[in-house]
Structures are given as structure tokens and as C-alpha cells.
Length: 337
Image (cartoon, rainbow, N blue to C red; front, side, top):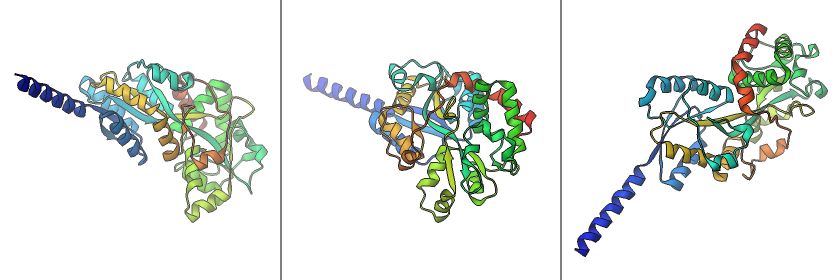
């Protein structure tokens, strides 16, 4: 009987171990950075929870979640930019997450009841040192000054990075001033908006324009590159932290939320808590040149260290992110296509 009892106990333990190994969390993610592979692998190593993920474009993934409804296998939706997270939240796909660990580690201004940020990136001004007086480009508002006519390069006004900046400006400066700013910015374009942020940086370095707006991680990526063309381009560029004497530089996010229909909610919350761990936070900084949201995470990225400290806009994301739709209407009226 003792042998039988031992055998049954051992079998139960094996089944329990097998069940633990079978635990999963299903991610729908719009992040496409190779450096995230190590992040996911480390989560599985630490927890035994397997990650299944589907990658795609933000709009396609959100539409898929809505179409799948209650039968969706997705537990977590990950995307970049607060405007996209807000769009998902307005679509009603997220559920509130209660976690003392997340509340303790993620600053209140970088989370909402239904989603949270796990890394940040700043929207900076970059100018050609030979073409532009640095005193002319110290704030976002400066970019609408007529003295910068034919000097501005920037990507499409419909891109979330610019919509989020517009939403922040709208929240701080009001509709009338933001619309006047957008019209002034458009009047200063050196060319019609095209390409991504890296294209704007290269255009400024080449002298096609004098000033660009870009996310900081594109700048840091180029700073860390050893390619001769990148080294040459960076030598021609200077980075400005905008609005240091007012509300601070606009900071956007990568973030995630647990889906309302998540079949593995407990594992999903564990995954979000892992994203807020020091280990994961360092991955974001070292791997993709983003700032950790957790203050205790050690920063070892040479490019971010070289860019130095700055005053960030601390306006809560839940106050400005909902204004992205209004920002789009303003940009449309201003002709920022």
C-alpha cells in the first residue's frame, strides 16, 4: 500500500509539473524589436509560463481582437504610443488590473486604470548645427515661428507619434493656440511629410532641412551605430530637449493592457508585473534605447547617458491621450497630411 501511495503521489507530482509547464500567456503585440526576444525568453525561464504571441500592425491586431470577441485567445495587447493604447481602451477591449506591484513600480502618471506604460521615449527636436540658430528651436512652439520657413522636416501628421505630441500641446496650450501652432509648422515645412523619423534625421544632416522632430530612440540608435554614414550624420546634428523652461519635453510610451476576455488572466498579470521588474526594464533601455519607467532600474545605455538628463512632461497619460482624436482634426484643418 505504501508503494502504491508513493506511486500515486509521484504521478500527481508529475502531472502537476506538466500542468505548470503547460501554463501559457498569449500576446498580441505590435512591437517588432528583435531585442524583445530575450525579454520573452527570460520571462518563461523565471516563471515556467510559455509565451505564445502573434505580431502585427496595431490597427490589424485591434480589429482582430474585436472580431474574435469572447472567443479571443489573446491575454495581453502590447503596442507603442499612448494614442494607440487609448484607442484600444475606447474600444472596450481592456479590463482593470489590480496589482500592488504595478502600482508601486509604475509611476501614476504613466498608467491608467486599464493600461500601463513599461518604457518611455521622448519627442525631441534635432537641428543642423550649421543651418540653425539653437536659440530658435528651444520649444515645440518655436517651430511655428516664420523665421524657420522652409526649415522643418517631419513625418505625417496622421502618425501616432505626432498625434500624441499634438494631444499634449492641446492639453497644455488649448485648441486655439495648438491650431495656430500646427498652421505655423506646416507653413515652415521644407518638404511634404514623408518617411519615418530616421529619414527626417538624415534629411537634416544632409541639409535638405534645418530642423526635425523625432523620437529619442531613433537618435540613440544612430548614436550607437558604427556605420560610417550614421557617424557622419550624427556629427552634423544637435539634440534639443524642448520646453525645459515650461512644461517639459513630451514623453510617449510603449505599453500594454490585459484583455477583458483573457483566458489566462493570472498569467497575464504576472507578465505585466514582469515587464515592470528591474530585469525587464533594463532590456528596454539597453536593447531598444528606451527609458525604463521604474526609477530603480539601472541605466547602462551609453547613448542615453550621453543624451543626459532632462525635464520630462509629467502630465498624466490619461489626461492627454484622449485628445489625440481632437489633435487629428486640428492637423487636418492645418493641412498637415
